[in-house]
Amino acid sequence: MAPEAAARVWLLKLSAGEEIGLSRVLARPRHDELLRQWRNYRAEMNSSRRPPQKIETVVPRSQAPVTEELSENRQSIDTATSEIWPT
Image (cartoon, rainbow, N blue to C red; front, top):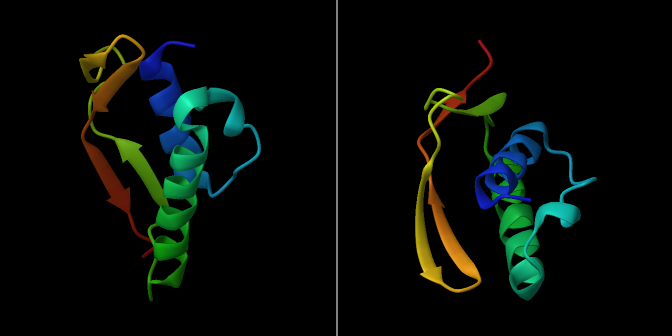
């Protein structure tokens, strides 16, 4: 899976609060670290008095997120997000 697609799935799963299927998109060398990070973000969101209802990218789908090659097997994905809170 392309790194940009994996990042999109990670964010969609974070927004939905659904961990099922997340492990398949996480890079093996950092799988445990990324899963722990995801769980920590979800815990913080759930412990707040008013967690966001949804998290979405604010970059149009036709425009790819900014990627940076960190090493042969590692990339950084940077995209803007927006949180939507229930009214």
